[in-house]
Length: 142
Image (cartoon, rainbow, N blue to C red):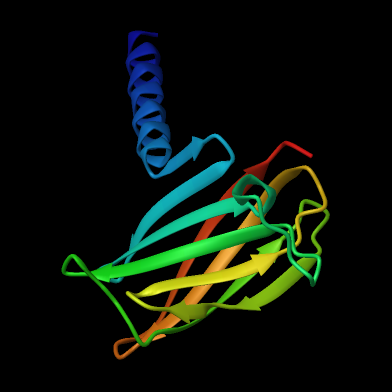
């Protein structure tokens, strides 16, 4: 019985560490959601926010903005080509090109029309190849 208790405690500690590590990579400040991940030596930083929170509207009906910065050796990477796929809780998807802006910033706009967790998949290509980052955007405010 004592072995089972030790095993359970060790398993619980591992779960806490795993969850704590994931939480560090995500942050929700007001209406802005941030996510950071490292893939293949590239630090990818994302911010998702509503256009309304920036006092903006979009003539195409988009409601949200995703911004991305990719860094290698601490410097913003430029000249990347990328796409973002956002998947609603009901499994509808939108595929967006990441537009390039000065200074190594990339962005796209999309429509959020459901509450819940949205899947975000970003693929970007540099001289080393294609890289993929996946995360969840929790949208719980309409």
